[in-house]
Image (cartoon, rainbow, N blue to C red; front, side):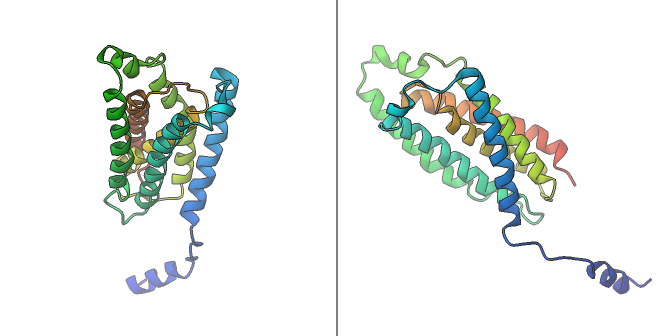
Length: 213
């Protein structure tokens, strides 16, 4: 068979991909993972008892907007990197905005606190457990993204896996806000971010091995 005839015969069976198929599949994977992570919170560490009051305050939304911004930017970058012609992670540069915003709030927080109280702002009461809980909550979300990637063909699997890990970490940190009572911007900037970075490292290692095609 001539090459042109072979290409023509293979192309005859191709079906158009539905619009937004990538986004829908990722939404299903992330939604399923979020349900598992929420169940984990409910059955293990629990939701904060004053959640109804907390959601009316600035601190809760400071944390949630920061983590959700990171998660959504990383999701957008993950959608882009899922395609075989994508080599650079778009949207990640936008992460500088929430990080810079929280750094500004943390700086104002420190300037209004005596130096003797800075360590308490930095460590809070749960610095040892916070990043690991964010990391644990990110695992179901990352598994959901791995399921979604079974239908994709990323050109750079390690990078795609890392960005997917950041997406899972950012969304997991948002869910963790439903439990965590810490009120310091410096705490969130340090320990929440560390948990998100740990998820990104996990994603890079796993993605390099499992997202190849």
